[in-house]
Length: 210
Image (cartoon, rainbow, N blue to C red; front, side, top):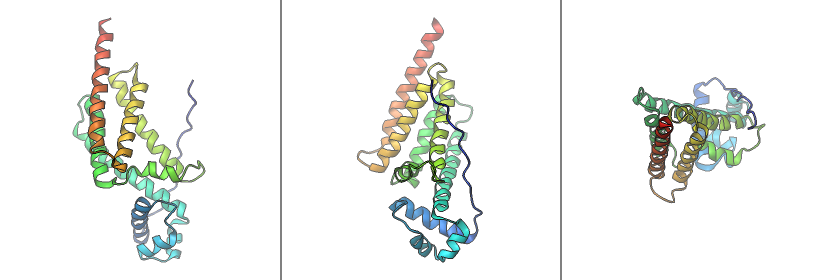
């Protein structure tokens, strides 16, 4: 029996004033380019053109800026993905699975030159008590749930196995894109996904003939 996962708590968010938006824009760029631990609040404030007092008045702590940075990227990713899925609405689950990978390819090309921000952040934030930790793990659980729901439409009996394999291919493509050791990792992942979906369809057809 698998362990029961605790429900993911929604992180505390702050109200975005113009000053807060400048801070967050600077922090997002710096965190993604240099890493979270390498960037201090002095640099963020200087890049945003605000005082440290303004930064702390708006966010309270660097940890909260990290929460806003990761949660904001996750929101934009989900919006982009929703657009891709709307484009194939009404089509089969296999088409929608491919649309997820195509959306990730677009996202990685536009916003992910250094790989997945969640994976990068988790390399620095592994303490579950950190307020950004639930954002990181929650985003990945959401992706697994998405794949699981699609997999159930394709192969109900093997849905969990299929979903986890799709998740591994998806996350591997994100990492490989950020490392840049070979071209078009999403193209390679999509080839494997098509094979998986074809095998699942064949297995479903065989089962229906029994």
